[in-house]
Image (cartoon, rainbow, N blue to C red; front, top):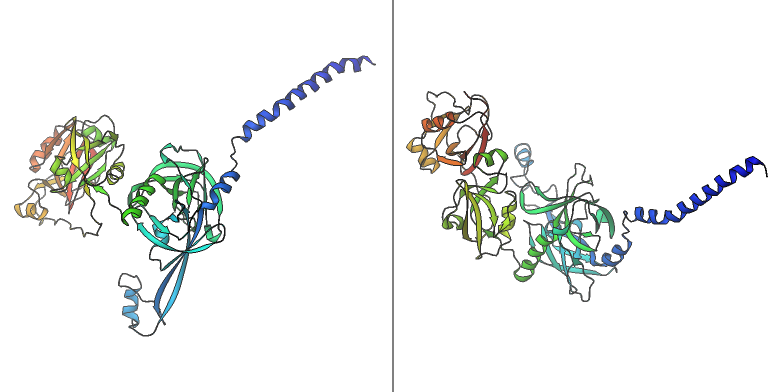
Length: 483
């Protein structure tokens, strides 16, 4: 053996030993890395049979020449002016079909889906994974939470396990099973993107946001965690194209099951109310009310004769807790109160004049929502205007007629804002009170309010309680200069 060969042997032996050690260690490392990517096969096999496909048929009668148009339709005025509106005449019946998803919550055939899936349905057909089909009865639907319960005549059905969405964490894996674009029993996966999402025109559902691929037809289907528990009902997507764009929203299953229980028991949903209008507490308004952090729900106004007024709640109170449960934001209060059974007494912890106090309120039943036309307050006749105050507002005293029209005993009118809008204040608003440094002063005259603002420091936060038409609310403005 040459000297070169002898010298390289120890190095080769060392490399072989190192390679062996690496190969022996590889499975553990690979297994650890592989564990980060979940396997959904078992979940699909166990939970898939409890997910159903829903086909909805709506029968619509239309004229032979063109559809009937309501006066609210944007084309109604066009045809009224430029063409004869069809009156009577032969009509034909058309069938409009749509699809959705659902899941079985009891072995005797109760199924949960979205209210918008079965809305105005003439016939609801349910298809199971074993290819059996049933005509379902709509037990009840609640548009506010977008939850519906339907029933099929069957027994010994597979059912889902209901989980706890409170334990769900952002970043956790979740999966959906449903019927996107008519493709039955499709599974998609993603993560929880956020919790407690507030969406426009809906303050009773703290939506779970995910990036799970949700498309038309997934509505009403379950959202599962990795334990195979249902944690939500897939309900909405954000999309500019009509399809998946990475933003999907699910109704937390605890909110949904509360609705389901009431629909099954009595066919309708009752919700609690205390009779207050509220708004968010900003950092600036928290400073002006003397609150250390921006949390709770700021009471704009209290319904006359309502539960809150009877108990002693006042406009300007900040509701911090309900029966010891934190109210982190204004959107959380309706969710908490509506879940309380009407007739139940709850304790509100409120912030008033720089201190906390507890108020016992008996929760009443929320009345059926109805559209109420809002009446705007009238603007007084033109007259010589005063100069803008520290906040840039031109104020004037209310006349007796203006007080009667606005149904207020006191207050000061905002005549003009020459420098532009300040906060959410508009000309025609009535200032009812001014809050700063933790104290609240009722607005009686324009001179009084101007003098109060003149005494405040630069950059100090001031919260105005305003009345606009039939609405009262708070607007917080920070003074920008010392003039």
